[in-house]
Image 1 (cartoon, helix red, strand yellow):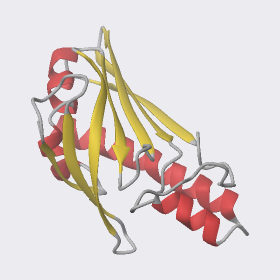
Image 2 (spheres, one colour):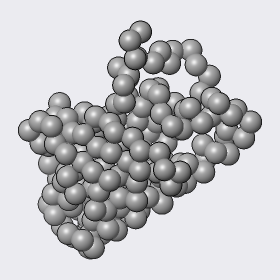
Image 3 (cartoon, one colour):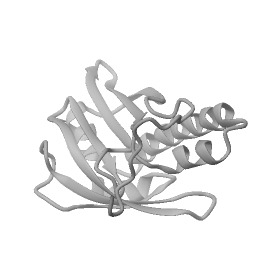
Image 4 (cartoon, helix red, strand yellow):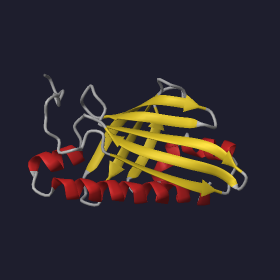
Length: 171
Protein backbone atom coordinates (compact mmCIF):
# COMPACT_ATOMS: atom_id res chain seq x y z
CA UNK A 1 0.00 0.00 0.00
CA UNK A 2 3.02 2.29 -0.48
CA UNK A 3 3.37 3.73 3.03
CA UNK A 4 -0.35 3.94 3.75
CA UNK A 5 -1.42 2.14 6.89
CA UNK A 6 -4.65 0.16 6.61
CA UNK A 7 -6.34 0.40 10.00
CA UNK A 8 -9.69 -1.11 9.08
CA UNK A 9 -10.61 -3.97 11.35
CA UNK A 10 -7.78 -3.38 13.81
CA UNK A 11 -8.66 -3.90 17.48
CA UNK A 12 -7.43 -0.63 18.90
CA UNK A 13 -8.56 -1.19 22.51
CA UNK A 14 -10.78 1.88 22.51
CA UNK A 15 -8.35 4.33 20.92
CA UNK A 16 -10.58 5.36 17.98
CA UNK A 17 -13.08 7.87 19.33
CA UNK A 18 -11.22 8.32 22.63
CA UNK A 19 -11.89 11.91 23.62
CA UNK A 20 -10.92 14.53 26.15
CA UNK A 21 -12.44 17.99 26.49
CA UNK A 22 -11.70 20.98 28.70
CA UNK A 23 -13.57 24.23 29.23
CA UNK A 24 -12.06 27.37 30.75
CA UNK A 25 -13.10 30.96 31.24
CA UNK A 26 -10.49 33.52 30.18
CA UNK A 27 -10.55 37.25 30.85
CA UNK A 28 -10.25 38.21 27.19
CA UNK A 29 -12.86 39.09 24.59
CA UNK A 30 -13.81 36.35 22.13
CA UNK A 31 -12.20 38.30 19.26
CA UNK A 32 -8.82 38.19 21.00
CA UNK A 33 -9.11 34.49 21.82
CA UNK A 34 -10.04 33.78 18.18
CA UNK A 35 -6.87 35.57 17.05
CA UNK A 36 -4.80 33.47 19.46
CA UNK A 37 -6.27 30.03 18.70
CA UNK A 38 -5.84 30.56 14.95
CA UNK A 39 -2.19 31.66 15.32
CA UNK A 40 -0.85 28.16 14.68
CA UNK A 41 2.61 29.62 14.06
CA UNK A 42 2.74 30.46 17.80
CA UNK A 43 1.65 27.08 19.21
CA UNK A 44 5.28 26.12 19.80
CA UNK A 45 5.52 29.01 22.30
CA UNK A 46 2.52 27.83 24.29
CA UNK A 47 2.13 24.07 24.09
CA UNK A 48 3.97 21.51 26.24
CA UNK A 49 4.23 19.19 23.20
CA UNK A 50 3.88 21.21 19.99
CA UNK A 51 7.22 22.66 18.92
CA UNK A 52 6.11 24.45 15.76
CA UNK A 53 3.22 25.23 13.47
CA UNK A 54 3.39 26.76 9.99
CA UNK A 55 0.60 27.63 7.58
CA UNK A 56 0.98 25.90 4.21
CA UNK A 57 -2.02 27.60 2.60
CA UNK A 58 -4.05 30.74 3.10
CA UNK A 59 -4.71 30.64 6.83
CA UNK A 60 -7.93 30.20 8.77
CA UNK A 61 -10.38 28.80 6.27
CA UNK A 62 -11.89 25.36 5.83
CA UNK A 63 -9.54 23.39 3.60
CA UNK A 64 -6.38 25.26 4.65
CA UNK A 65 -3.44 23.16 5.72
CA UNK A 66 -0.68 23.70 8.22
CA UNK A 67 2.38 21.71 9.20
CA UNK A 68 3.14 21.01 12.84
CA UNK A 69 5.63 19.14 14.94
CA UNK A 70 5.49 17.65 18.42
CA UNK A 71 8.13 16.48 20.87
CA UNK A 72 7.11 14.05 23.57
CA UNK A 73 8.74 13.39 26.97
CA UNK A 74 10.09 10.05 25.69
CA UNK A 75 12.06 11.91 22.98
CA UNK A 76 9.78 10.95 20.09
CA UNK A 77 9.29 13.72 17.54
CA UNK A 78 6.47 13.79 15.01
CA UNK A 79 5.85 15.98 11.98
CA UNK A 80 2.29 16.12 10.66
CA UNK A 81 0.01 17.92 8.25
CA UNK A 82 -3.24 19.36 9.56
CA UNK A 83 -6.36 20.14 7.53
CA UNK A 84 -8.73 22.83 8.81
CA UNK A 85 -12.25 21.42 9.11
CA UNK A 86 -13.98 24.28 10.94
CA UNK A 87 -13.31 28.02 10.73
CA UNK A 88 -16.18 30.09 12.05
CA UNK A 89 -14.71 33.43 13.17
CA UNK A 90 -15.02 34.06 16.89
CA UNK A 91 -16.90 30.77 17.34
CA UNK A 92 -15.17 27.57 16.17
CA UNK A 93 -11.79 26.40 14.87
CA UNK A 94 -10.94 22.75 14.22
CA UNK A 95 -8.55 20.53 12.28
CA UNK A 96 -7.75 16.92 11.45
CA UNK A 97 -4.20 15.61 11.92
CA UNK A 98 -2.57 13.37 9.31
CA UNK A 99 0.65 11.40 9.31
CA UNK A 100 1.45 9.22 6.29
CA UNK A 101 -2.01 7.70 5.97
CA UNK A 102 -5.14 8.85 4.19
CA UNK A 103 -7.27 8.91 7.35
CA UNK A 104 -6.67 11.32 10.24
CA UNK A 105 -5.31 10.04 13.51
CA UNK A 106 -6.71 12.94 15.53
CA UNK A 107 -9.15 15.81 15.49
CA UNK A 108 -8.70 18.99 17.53
CA UNK A 109 -11.35 21.65 17.97
CA UNK A 110 -12.01 24.89 19.84
CA UNK A 111 -15.42 26.46 20.50
CA UNK A 112 -15.74 30.01 21.81
CA UNK A 113 -18.59 31.95 23.37
CA UNK A 114 -18.80 35.30 25.06
CA UNK A 115 -19.34 35.54 28.79
CA UNK A 116 -19.77 38.66 30.90
CA UNK A 117 -16.30 37.98 32.35
CA UNK A 118 -14.58 37.30 29.02
CA UNK A 119 -14.68 34.23 26.81
CA UNK A 120 -15.51 30.61 27.48
CA UNK A 121 -13.03 28.42 25.62
CA UNK A 122 -13.85 24.76 25.08
CA UNK A 123 -11.19 22.56 23.48
CA UNK A 124 -11.49 18.90 22.54
CA UNK A 125 -9.23 16.16 21.23
CA UNK A 126 -10.77 13.11 19.57
CA UNK A 127 -8.64 10.20 18.46
CA UNK A 128 -9.21 9.10 14.86
CA UNK A 129 -8.63 5.80 13.17
CA UNK A 130 -5.21 6.65 11.70
CA UNK A 131 -1.85 5.38 12.90
CA UNK A 132 -0.53 7.21 15.95
CA UNK A 133 1.71 6.76 18.95
CA UNK A 134 -1.22 5.97 21.22
CA UNK A 135 -2.53 3.35 18.79
CA UNK A 136 0.89 1.74 18.39
CA UNK A 137 1.31 1.70 22.17
CA UNK A 138 -1.93 -0.18 22.85
CA UNK A 139 -1.50 -2.57 19.92
CA UNK A 140 2.03 -3.58 20.93
CA UNK A 141 1.15 -3.92 24.61
CA UNK A 142 -2.55 -4.73 25.04
CA UNK A 143 -2.07 -5.60 28.71
CA UNK A 144 -2.79 -2.37 30.59
CA UNK A 145 -3.80 -0.58 27.38
CA UNK A 146 -6.91 0.97 28.91
CA UNK A 147 -4.94 2.49 31.78
CA UNK A 148 -2.27 3.86 29.44
CA UNK A 149 -4.93 5.31 27.14
CA UNK A 150 -6.62 7.05 30.09
CA UNK A 151 -3.26 8.38 31.32
CA UNK A 152 -2.59 9.84 27.88
CA UNK A 153 -6.04 11.45 27.71
CA UNK A 154 -5.50 12.95 31.18
CA UNK A 155 -2.13 14.28 30.01
CA UNK A 156 -3.73 15.81 26.91
CA UNK A 157 -6.34 17.52 29.10
CA UNK A 158 -3.62 19.01 31.32
CA UNK A 159 -1.71 20.13 28.22
CA UNK A 160 -4.82 21.81 26.79
CA UNK A 161 -5.33 23.81 29.98
CA UNK A 162 -1.64 24.71 30.04
CA UNK A 163 -1.69 25.80 26.39
CA UNK A 164 -4.75 28.02 26.86
CA UNK A 165 -3.21 29.59 29.98
CA UNK A 166 0.06 30.25 28.11
CA UNK A 167 -1.85 31.77 25.15
CA UNK A 168 -3.60 34.21 27.46
CA UNK A 169 -0.47 35.04 29.45
CA UNK A 170 1.80 35.45 26.41
CA UNK A 171 -0.51 37.22 24.04
